[in-house]
Image (cartoon, rainbow, N blue to C red):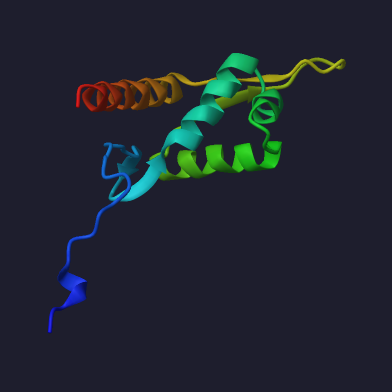
Length: 119
């Protein structure tokens, strides 16, 4: 009697493609990944946390929570906020450390993409 479970199966699509998920860690713990990068980038482009969060379709509270979580883990401020005058006009800016974190993430991510494109 032949064992049918060992018979080779024909797959419709056997093409495999490489992919990756990149994040930055500290002490083997997640700190920064694609979502955090997108939040900082949107804040940098829009000039406020509110507008950056809206651009990404998320709440201010969620974006602020992501920022504070990263800051607690690295022990460095990554977003600096400032209040406007009596008519409003406050905003936010990414600190030098935050910009360095973004640049590091973007540089490594781009290198991975180029490596995958070469496969």
